[in-house]
Amino acid sequence: MKLPGHDAIARQAGDHLVTHRVKLPRKVVERPIRQVAKRVLMALLVLVATALIVYADRDGYNDNADGPVDLLDAFYYATVTLSTTGYGDITPVSDGARLTNIFVITPLRVLFLIILVGTTLEVLTERTREEWRLNRWRSTLRDHTVVIGFGTKGRSAVQTVCATGLKKEQVVVVDPSAKAVDAATAEGYAGVMGDATRSDVLKRAELHRARQIIVAPQRDDTAVLVTLTARQLNRSAKIVAAVREEENAPLLKQSGADAVITSASAAGRLLGLSVLSPAAGMVMEDLIQQGSGLDLVERPVVRAEVGKRTRETDDLVVSVVRGHRVLGYDDPAIGTLQLTDRLITIVRASPGARVTPDNRPLPHD
Image (cartoon, rainbow, N blue to C red; front, side, top):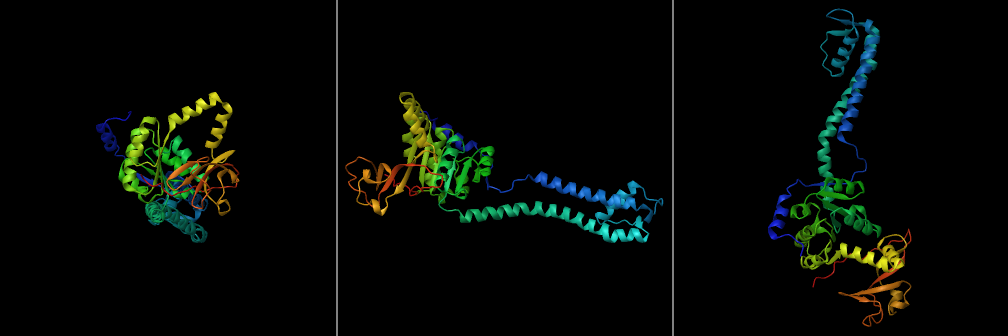
């Protein structure tokens, strides 16, 4: 057993007090500092343009302090005018200067105020808009897939599931790393940053309403804690977990996982198979990769196949799922195919074909 003691597990669950937050994917990602900088630059350009206009017509203005208007006075006048302060110490006295104020300076003043007020309103409403979007997302999220851990295993798992037709809007990624969550949202998934061993973090991912849960953290002890917490929050969801060491697989099943994948031993067996038979290793790797070459899929029995034997179907049948049992293709108990059966078959992958797997959770023993 390669799990730490109970005290270490408890410390791990209690030490991660990082503030968790939900992050939805965005179509256009632009940093707020860039938005503010762009608006400030626009305001400065309006200010400079106004000052140059006043300076070009400086003979039509009068400075109550010293009479003539120089470049500094022009910038001063533009500043107090655009900000609607208007001290009155510099005033347009000629008809040309007054017409310029009416038709040029006034529109520039309005544009200047729009830029400043628009920036302020955007900053103030961004939080409200994000909260409204988040509440709408939570109210519509049902029967989704929660992926815990967006490393190599989690990313590959969600890509495989989405390749069968699952929409990206129906996937929520939970990971303690901000970079991993950013990567998930960049690919179109919703992300929750936080420690998945905490129930409040999983509730933010609406795990209690999920249909499928993929547990793929970096550590086996974390996988056990996450699976226990997830099963407590959702009794009916299908939970698939990954562990590094095969001896920890029974503990995952006792914690509530419907299926446990041992990554280290699976990779080792594939390596050994490739040594003994490189061609067989290539076939196995082809089956693992979704969407290219050969694919291993699960589908329902169609009416035309009812009453036939497994070898009489068009596809290459590997196993038959009947009730709670998974039967090999040559198992005598299969007899003939029934309408309620599901077939696990090997098919030639085609770019336009999508096969939706069974999303019903397996019954617990």
